[in-house]
Length: 300
Image (tube, rainbow, N blue to C red):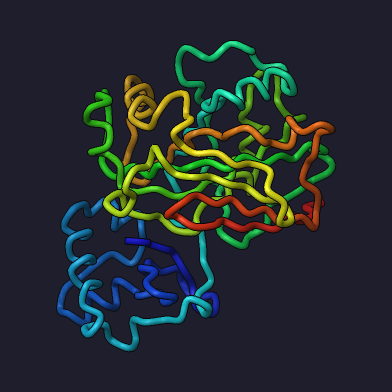
């Protein structure tokens, strides 16, 4: 299933399934059939397999969709799929990006022996079509990073690599926006955690609809020009290893997001460097998930 959070005419955000250029409101669909489904994605994730099975069964019978549950996709304004409790970022997780960063950002040239982890606050999340805020009082080096996002479905602590995928609800896209000139003594929180620095969406695709998350093409474009192109198979630490490493000491809860790292092609690594400015449009794409598009606006 391709699950989205949407509004109609600035109404309360609702949970829908995107099907054939339409959004099917899941709570309305369920009510029509005498059952219930949550009206928001986080509650849907927490409800577990029963919600997934009910939604799948009802969506598989288009003849049973009531008119009031069906909205043209063009009429629906997309929001971030959910507000994660935690966003855990992974730095230096593609080999070519390790080299690129060591050359342009003074990071270690050697491959990290364990995942490099950092966090973004939930207040950094912004949705599809919503602005990335460029405050020239804080940065002149606003950069992009297209990343596959893993959405956790079950509480996970001390999870083995073999069991890691059992704890994944689905996959999305995070654009790990970074103010390169706001790194502080090697700490990345303010560089990566400012408001709007975690564009997220446009949908969460459930794990059963992604054939192989370790074989997905990624691409990022600025004003239509490709800057990043890679595939998740080039991750230094694959998804299962990331989950095992994180949960060795941190509990992952339903709705938490892991941003699995950026391939090479970031602005800081360009010769000469390129950075985002107001008026730019950034498109981050991941195969089977879609494209997350955000404008850059002046935040002063």
